Length: 219
Image (cartoon, rainbow, N blue to C red):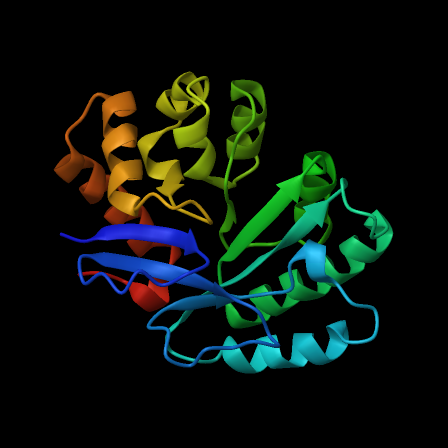
């Protein structure tokens, strides 16, 4: 059984790992087996974002595109939140059009995120990647239909153990994002926190993956 990594910025080229490699519209690598593609809120450009949106729409129709993203909102950046919302909304509408799940970057804008989900009546799965916040916020996100992915901060912050352990098995994913550690190390720690063995954890994540990322379904 494979390790599933739902968000990384570099391919490990490891045959025991199925990974979704984050891609950007202006630097697309056609050799990546599975990918997501989106406009990250850090890199929104007023002159180019609509052209990038057209590239994203083209790539979403590729058979090995598993999600739109990462995209989202980040209030700690200088880009005005109103502009970020405009770009994010356009991407969410594309995800709805092509029935693609969304991998979300969200910093200090969770209430805006939840409100936008309902404003647009988004029905596709939405995955918060790199979660590092409280049990209370996790519960609010789960109540509003989001999935939550853990990785970098699970390794770096031991206080996340209780948060991760509290998440229902059918609502979480694992990832590496930008850390040097491999996904196997994330699974080892996650299995410890859930008090289960790694094979059982792989089965849980695979089931969630098949539910959310239908283009990459593992039968």
